[in-house]
Length: 364
Ligand code: GDP
Image 1 (cartoon, helix red, strand yellow):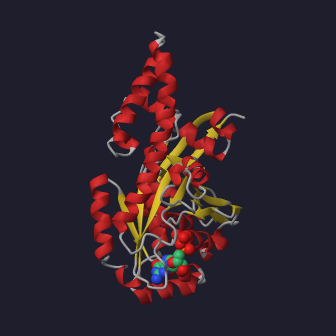
Image 2: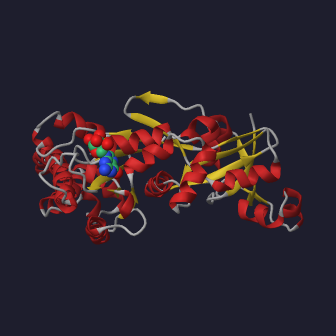
Image 3: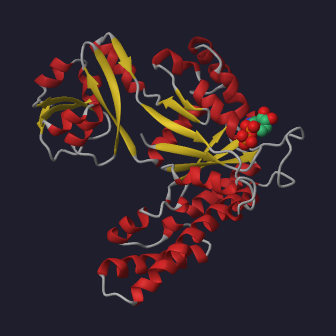
């Protein structure tokens, strides 16, 4: 499954947020919670549609879809030069699909700030610089190798890689993340093999105190402005509060949230933002035994979506009967959706949409 790495300076609240994500009570109720290793957590993706579909279809069980978060601690200034356990941590980030960058936006004299004082932009620059330097190192090393062979060959592949590396070097040397490089599709494929960190989509998580939760604070304004410049998203959450909410039973939790004037835990917003950042969407299978949510990358065709359930479904794919969950909510039953002519039969080329309810027909 695709995953999201949580990075940030020490003491900004990464572990607090990660622990809240992976210990939330709703987790245990709906899904056999599993920890892959202490720093990797599987999180259920909250989706109101699942309960709404179940209310109409009344299955024996409902199964949410999940995504993975990885707590990547220990990134400090100088990591790209091997400070601390720098290289090891950078290696972990390299293996993720997207990056959640936690920024401290709360004052608390008791919590030491590693860079001397709360200053979100300074913090962002430290982390982003380390990530950029790590990429620069990767690209420079590769460039040195390729440049030598590029001179001695007419091989188009090597020439193409040479050109790609040159573009990446120009962007990184200008202090800009690799994702801003203007690459052709072919160059993008070449660049993918480098596993550059700054090529991954990034999301800022402003860790605020309770007072800053609804309207933000002076720090979050700075983060938002910066994110806007970069075309990135910001999610504000209060790590301390989330870790309390995560420990409540679902019924207590709703009451607690209502008291605080909140609609849902901030973690839900974080999970949804990370899901979007990874460009993921959800489709459903809905039978009397089980209603279940499945995750696919946006743009996946019907056979690929079937393959998420089982590779045999993809291999033997014939067609998918399909309707929109919104139509089910609108008309109240599968039968009514059918009568309205909204149940379609889709073939191999159908691009699955978020919220689709699918029934696969396949050969075994
Ligand atoms: P990490 O090093 O980034 O993983 O940071 P931790 O999650 O270990 O948090 C560092 C310290 O900040 C701990 O003492 C937390 O209790 C505290 N902390 C985390 N989030 C918040 C918050 O939202 N508000 C306040 N006041 N303290 C927080």
